[in-house]
Length: 191
Image 1: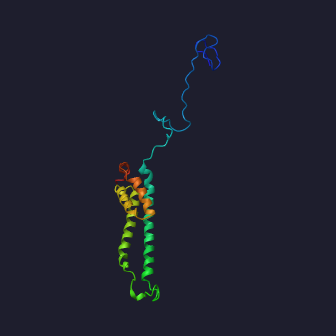
Image 2: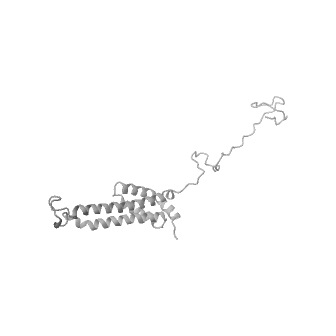
Image 3: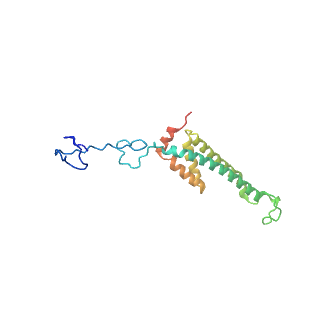
């Protein structure tokens, strides 16, 4: 260090100059900038979780994942619905002979009366699968109606345990809050 009064070299750590007796003034240490990344703005010193990356809104973080999951769920519903339909049809209407099962022959028609409801069940499954696919595509393409359609389909899918329930809860968690509505409106494609 150098004494500001007499200009002589002085040992570090002393409070007074040994030559002239003047009080030593320790120069302030300039703040050191971080090695990389921006310096946090004033007031952010109290927040240790400061990130140099801009914050991505909640809806934008989950929109791609939700759209993809709804498309996969719709395809899953189509495949399982068709497999179930063909299995039930083969087990109840196929010509298995007069001794299978319990003596029902091929000439007696469908053995179970609920088979008359099969067209309604198949139609409901196809409509739900189409709604799930449409909701997924509308979220991926950021259509203005995509958020509301996904919420409606999520509520309907809650009864389809386990996949529909999990996807419905995830969709409602990400898209149902009022703040999510504003975020979705800001990023919706209106072209």
